[in-house]
Length: 491
Figure (spheres, one colour):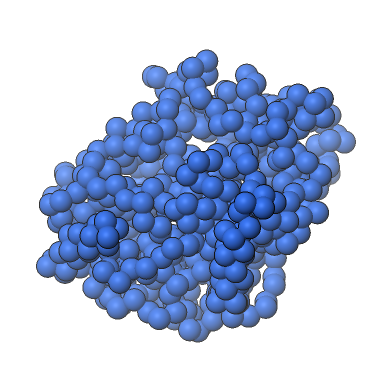
């Protein structure tokens, strides 16, 4: 009864946006970002601007992406349809294949309704113009899905002349990169490595502490960018009619995070600020899929949500979601096949290729996850505890089940506990139901061949000292190594 009352209040409150047709909409998308914000109770980090946004908006505790890797996740959000259904589930694949004609990018719907669609922002780190979808597309230009594949009208700036406008701005600084060290060095209040709190499934080691602190430094830098966007809206006189949505594109880039169906890979922050609504400061436990955010934006614009969308407008009275269906498939050279359902109370994961370990020695992760190297060595030496060891075992369980209320860090797999047999059976059935519902529209498979494995092999052979530095938990600079590799192969 309480849940129904709360949903009704939300619907009444947020549907009042229809009184002002076609508001401006800004979609801020932080890259590789779990719910590691102060307003979510994250220790050791200060995010005053997102705190303020949550205080004046709605914060969602149970928002999940449908894939824990950037391009499949972004593909689902760009169409508002689960990536499996559109056959865009494989990372950086099918880039030359047009979307099936039954689907449209949601920016096409907005543009047809009179919106100016803007990509990026001139003042955020590296301009925030990432699109990264697994179907044929171009950043700027018209769209007809046959000869023209443009997703946006312009880049970097929005003004009164663009109204109504939709702006999608990527906040890239939280994505792993060589800038992490520079951002930390320039911070006037870098996160203290001695006092921070690590998740229990990560080993307590100086290199891991430093890496975690660097991540939180990026989060604070990103928070300042959010503040800058709000200041610009005020300065341009647009603050009163611009809805702002803040999310992550997938979970954090660390152990169990990006690339995995555990909670740190799927659960994302979601805050929606609507200045045209008087009653804000709400926190909700309702379950939301990232595709629902797309449908909500379309609904905000006064557009009827297409039937092909698997997302639903979040604030509609008939919004009904108990589970978010997650999928992990190709990521670079590792072809996985895992499925999951996430609810407010439970997390279920089915690993159809249990022989592929979590630590699959994927080249990308070798370069970009110091914790993997440190903990891999500790595992070999028998130094990891029972919660840290599973990530480094030679295989993974066929099924995983976690009680998210009593075990939010997913330390105890209940899939083989007889007491939870009924729950397991129910979630197994739900997952199979989604398997059928999200059956791909085609079986085209055109993956991009990654050079990472060849570069890693070359590094081990030609630069063993650099490789040893990497094994010791130091990020040696992937782009720098790529440059040296290319230079060596020009001779």
